[in-house]
Amino acid sequence: MNAGMSKPAKRTRTVASKTASTGITIVPKVDVQGYVFYRVQGWRENGKWQRRRFKERSEAETFAAAQRVQMENQGRAQRMVLSPLTDEQHEEALQAFDKLGGTYPLADAIAFFLKHHRPPEFTIRLKDATALYIDDKERDGLRPRTIHGIGWTLKLFNTATDNPHVHEITQQQVEAFLKGLRAKNGKDKATRRSWEIHRGALHGFFEWCAASDASTNRPFTFANPAATVRKFSSRQVREEQDAKPATTSPEDVRRMFSVLMRWRGGVLVRPFAFLYFAGIRPDELKRMAGRERELVNLKTRTITIPANVSKTRHERQVAISDNLAAWLKAFPGDLIPTNFEALNKKVRKHFELTHDEARHSFISYHVALHRSIGDAALQAGNSEGIVKRHYLNTHTQDEGNAFFRAVPDLATRKATLAAQPVPVAKKHLKVV
Image 1 (cartoon, rainbow, N blue to C red):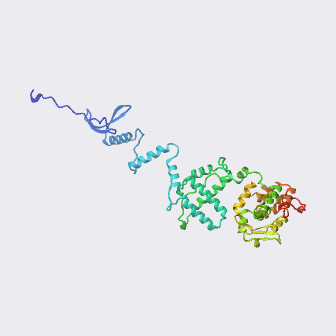
Image 2 (image 1 turned 90 degrees about the vertical axis):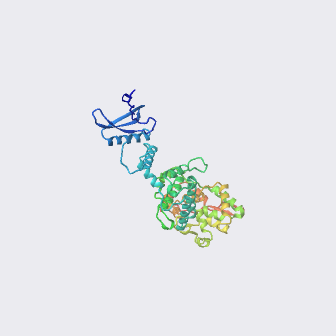
Image 3 (image 1 turned 120 degrees about the vertical axis):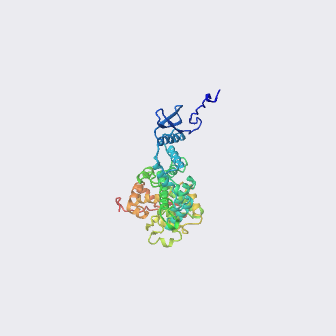
């Protein structure tokens, strides 16, 4: 065969790679009429290979780019938007939308994160911030018992949250902590009063953390996570509490003092006489130690509770009843004996005394005997409203008389009833 009759070379067809995951190509072509067009090819729809033609190359490139992005993102619907974000930032944004779904808008999620996780200039762990807060409260002159309670709440919260940075603590963590509180039996939910005590302590702490103070490098956080936590009103707390406070019957008072007279040489008779027959709070009694000559006057029959001793920080005076005077004269000595805490704990456990039962007894029997809410409120250091709500009509006048007739009989080493009833004026109950 001569050279002129040789077989022409086979034309090679340009197609997109069948194996490339994003093998979309743009191929220039000329149609039968001689016009140039651009073919985009190399993707599948419903299992079939696709291609599309465009008059302008710019149109073909835009379409091809969209198809490539769609293939990279596994079928996500795409549209072309000019953006200053990098490819990595675009991918992070897509992942964020996927995780949020339709539950929260991305803007809300960002606002929440910045509110609770944006670190201030100075970051600090909860335990270290607690130490600074307690020190600050001590300098403010808060009562030791109050400081102890605040410290106990923050210690429990720190254990529950594993000592996080203060600025990372959220409202959800505070609510989870409060909902997890339990009663003394370890099973029942804590009371509303307990909820409010702990919530108030946390609220005060975070308010302090969010305030500016150069000496402690505050703020430690930009928001108070306890600010919007559920708060129970005083009425709701009262509804859950017992209608009337626990008191000791006159017979049990005499039995208790008879035991105290014979136990350990009667070292607890004097402090318990102040608790039961003067209604002085235990913490007030401790602060009175060493100041008896100044504060207790048997001649004028008055006990002065100064502002720096009183729980309410207001001075008050308590009248010394005849039976209290008899106990104080029969059992002189230290107001707070050595090892008082341990001895007091044993007595309270033995007689199953509840919190402030001695004080509740004093106020209840005082109102029952003298029928004066105002006088009882003045001596107890409570408001008339509190006395009326909790102590009115809890006991009869005869029971009140029996309570304040309990006196020591040193011959028999027992508590007995005074020979004569306590004289009281015959008058109607009144509020002064």
